[in-house]
Length: 127
View 1 (cartoon, helix red, strand yellow):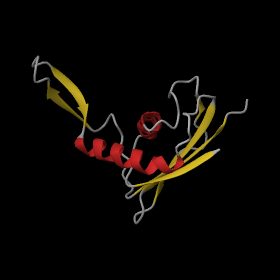
View 2: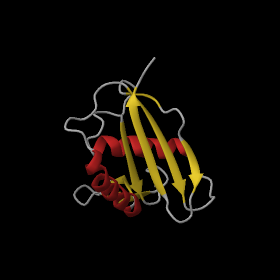
View 3: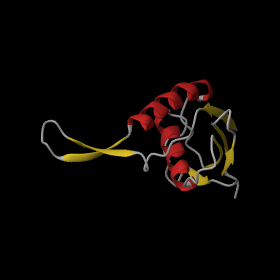
View 4: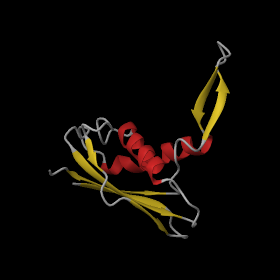
C-alpha cells in the first residue's frame, strides 16, 4: 500500500491544451498548457518522497480524492487520466494501462477552499 498527498489545485491534461507549430517542419501539434506543465513538475517533485525503488508492476486499485478550491464542475475522468499519467511519469507505476490499474474505486471530487490537493491511495488489487 502506498499513500501520497500532492499539494496544489489538480489540473486536467486534456482541458488545458494549446496548439503550437513545430519549428523545423511548421506542422501544428497539440501540447499541454504551461499551467499543466507546472503542475506536472510539482507533482513529480512531491511524489519523490513516496516513490518505490522499482515502479509498481502488479495490478493495483487507485483511489484519488481531489480537493478543489471552488465548486466549479470538473471532469473526474480527465482528472483520473492526468493522475495516472503523472504516476507513470514519476515512476511510481510502471504503466497506466488496464494490466496494472485494475480499479479506481472510491475516487471523488471534494471541496477545500484553503488547501486544494490530491490524496492518492494505491493498494494491491484483490479480485
